[in-house]
Image (spheres, rainbow, N blue to C red):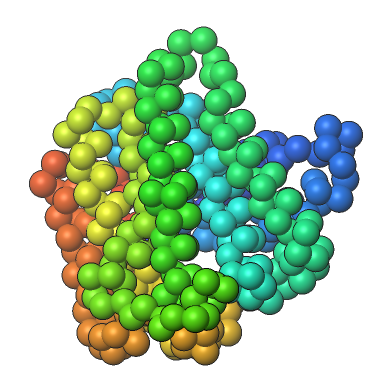
Length: 310
């Protein structure tokens, strides 16, 4: 990762963290305990990859069109993406789901607050995300039709056709749901594994980038290129995630997926082939940008994702 990219990521994270801190509800607007639980998970650190992708897509459109920075209008969209992502982590960590006790190097929300409050904190984060998306912008900042299109993209990615549906497939493939106990656990082949992750992981990653491009006023050619870029990037991200589960990420214990019998790329293809697939997906992401002459930081972010250690 170059020094310039490192500084870009640092500035993006600082902007996102400040905006998230301001967006979170606090007492007396809501009970102190739920405010604390929501903040615990949201402000626990993390890469902020998805909201950074939203900002970077907006920056790429700004650069392509020569217009002034649209970041002020895009930042609430980026924050909503992170709120949705964090809610999904809180719920995925629950005993009824993945039953994880560590997240981002510290105890998960249900370990600290109990299952009930963890569920409610995830519900609160998701609801606040759509409140933030719907909040009126300054007059003339972004046309309402553009904002509504971005909201629809994000809602589809977060719902049953996207992230929620992918998690449902994952639960079924793991055989953890009560309905699965009396029938054989389905085995995912390569196509099934990719389809699951396109929903569970890739959908929100794609929505993060596309919504940024939409909010910045990108034309259809740029939006389509960023859509294709993000689809490939989401695949690369998931493959690297699976590899890090085998090798051990910097802030997570190794072997969680294997111990839980979860379908992964290394389990299906092996580590070396999985690394090649991640590199190929990142190359395809870069090619999608190049074909539409989209510049900015998006290609560098692809390289960062493939080379990450957590």
